[in-house]
Length: 406
Ligand code: SIN
Ligand code: CO
Image 1: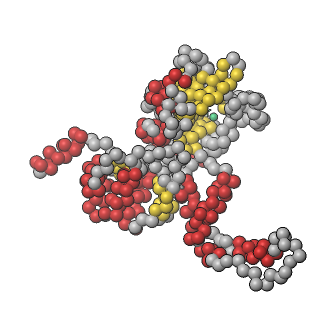
Image 2: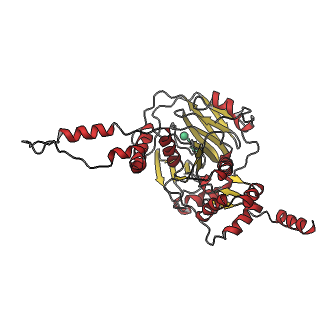
Image 3: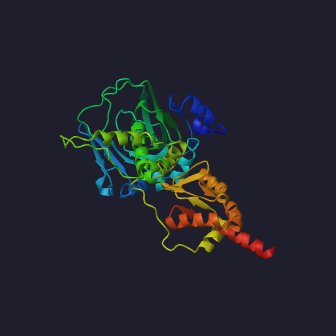
């Protein structure tokens, strides 16, 4: 689905449509002050605290005595080199899942389908820190969040990797362009475009990253889907019986596989069919599946369904940053599960999927007339997939006072 969204500083004054046509997946773009006056929403210490958690992926890359070193987290504060040591980088993956302000930043990139958007990785580096010249398989927006970083980029043809190093670093790298980025500046790179970012003093960089599965991986996963769901798919009727061989003759070579068995399976397999419905259903389930290290935090003492409906009508609800909610036509997929929903709930679910929240008025509307949507959302609330918006105390009190007075 395409929409004409207005132009914004985020894309250097381009409308998302123009950016997608001219740059996306094609050529780099440097955007000075993509987010004017940007200040990092997460401090260095808050990032270090995330890197100490088991459910957060982190890596430490350092360059010392002319050697690259790589270690995998979690890292306690004393596992990290001192801040006074130069040339090290801490990379923390999926920060949007843990920091609502970083999740809000990622939402600005939803002019690209959720099926392609992956996560926000944050790197912290001391002076001279970086991960070496390399190229990535995915598109990326590199937003400078704190301090400065010098980026050198080039369309590298020779992509041999250095040997004997624990990370992928290009053997040869000829930069064509070079810039120093300051907070709020952003560099977009298409897949396969070589780059090398080196911290100029202490700095933090946010990588808004995308995912693009390998075709082989898609095929394998689709075949798993067919296998798991075979019993319910229409072609299952061709596989309802048991192999029979009334025409089998006596054999001289008992170890040889019988022709009849091979021919029977060959002709049955020709009847294995799938269509767009199965492809859509597979993609919805697969792409909405949470990553293996994602754990939800259900409320310890969930409120009752009636109280939930009342609170939603006064505060609104939002999806957990960890929830993936996708749809295709009238079918919804939430965190890997397909959802059969009554027709009455579809417009609300579509709004929630696209905006990731419903405001109080939208919730007040459904509270009165639609118990089915309340039940779905309550179920998600109790699973930690969705939460009530924070209580905006004074506004609520004002409303209550007005109600009393009027
Ligand atoms: C970094 O932030 O240090 C690395 C990001 C990248 O080069 O992809
Ligand atoms: Co990179």
